[in-house]
Image (cartoon, rainbow, N blue to C red; front, top):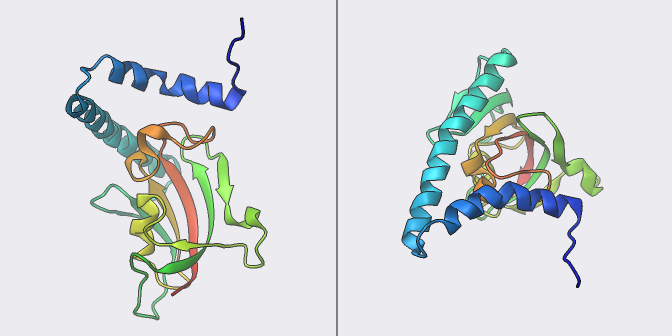
Length: 180
């Protein structure tokens, strides 16, 4: 008899998702009920994420920040006073960034890892996580920020690979290099 064997990162992700799968499996087979349960979980994590972000700000003595209605926190590092145009949904942007988990500051991604001469990456606004889509539309060329992204504006209940478990708040250092 053959048994299935998964690599360790896949096993970890499956174990992390098990409570959510059990919760959803315990629901009626009605998609409306499942959607309501998921929405309830997301709302619960919004409050938990906000508390986590507030604790991070306090522990790091950060008092100058902006909290958006969406729950996104912005810590401006360099705010350009020139240029009146901002990227919009559909704009092509070049961004230099480092992504970390907020809970343990472990770096999971950085634009310098892709080997481009600028150490940046290019993409379309609207094609990335909601926290980025929101932030980029507030930035001018040359702006640098740190954003603290609650899980519902990042990868939510699904997480992303083995480095970002479900419902994980994230921290990004971002610089808008250019956009069209």
